[in-house]
Image (cartoon, rainbow, N blue to C red; front, side, top):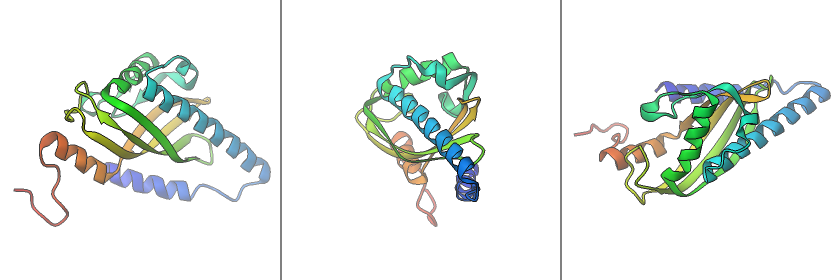
Amino acid sequence: MKKVLFVAALAVAMVSCDTKVSNEASTDHKAVADKNAEGTKKVFAALQSGDVAGLDSLFTEDVIDHDAGPNGQDIKGRDSVKAAIAKMHTYFEGLKIEIAEHATSSDGTYHFALAKMTGKATAANPWGMPAGMSVDDTNVEVVKMKDGKCSEHWSFMSMHDMHEAMAATKGGGAPPVGEKKN
């Protein structure tokens, strides 16, 4: 529930970003947003391929990837995050990530991306998804920037996608709204 509220608050924050800025500030904001988007694309390309070469320039040394570790634990430190990214592509066959939209907060601190991930789960995935299960998830990716580098990352899955994943891994998932699970 906290994640749902956070995503709702995030949407409000994105919509309420200060759009009444001077042309010069607006140009600076666009340059920051474009730079952040390019960095995000490079990270997603590394997720697809497992090739983490060159990611040092995109992450702070003490970067934290929230909820990406086993059982939703944080992954801390550039080398640990890069190792997790390198391994991620082994969990899905034909992994593809498309960025539908992106935005940067007016102060340039946060970058937001709406990303769609598709592929098929492999037996190596740590989430218990059956091998061959089709994955088609839409996530909101949130990156906190520090000195032009990613210092923190969060990913929020749609409730529909989360329910499908729960049903596949635990044999049931959540009941429809208004129904009790037996």
